[in-house]
Image (cartoon, rainbow, N blue to C red; front, top):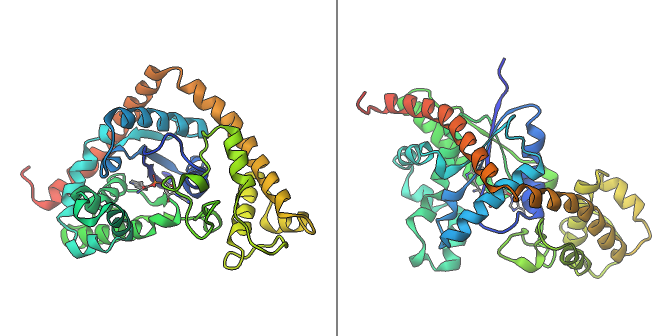
Length: 330
Ligand code: TYM
């Protein structure tokens, strides 16, 4: 029997992925390669929904590709592609946008947040239809599971609704996917404001995997905690300490309970220092691997094209099935 299909994507909107991306999603991408048939991609078409610089976008796409390989995405085992190199994403998106209500798109909280930041009147139509492109990404490959962080849950619900709507109206074509969200690490918080999600848009509390090691050490040292002294896990009352425990646990492999026990009677400073250490021991070899991969850009481009070729074969089959159902000329 064939393995269940996994699909997920990440935007190339920064010079480095951060530990929220890694723990919330990318770590699971790597792990799922053993049990699933995986398709992963760089969402460069999503990246142009806000203003961007063309040279930077191209550089960051290549750099993101290298980062995914360095994290352990195996381009032989999995399909690793760049979204814009597979035109079927945009083809399916058009059809899905004809099935989406304007009100439905307007209700997406990420759109509301992003549009509010830049002033709603200057938001692009692309920003509004962003989740529909995301739905097309997923449905194109008939994905069963989509490993993502908590912030993507609503987009996954829309994807499921659209799949069910299409299948109901035109006949079964799409697999209805499920979000794969690991509760413990689904929302890594900002080190400076542990009540907000870690995000590249707030650099002071965001730990980038490619930041200089000293910067990361400093960020952990100055992480915001609380006015108590006891190290225990309580996300409501002690969001800063709990976030450090979550991060430490994910990189050290020790459970939160084991850590709480090990830190009994010790200071917050010890927790910050030791969490920085386990993170840095992951980051250091990773940075070397990324640097090594980036020395051969043409090899990376070849891998991208191979990934796109393999993806197109699967994607075109879905487009054919959709076109046949929807009544387009044969
Ligand atoms: P993006 O590029 O914003 O983020 C990539 C992944 O990282 C997760 N993430 C986090 N997880 C835990 N804690 C955090 N602080 C944190 N910050 C980010 C995100 O949930 C995501 O899984 N719309 C997507 C890209 C996309 C996509 C898709 C994903 C486009 N098409 C199809 C899945 C399937 C996005 O903006 O991710």
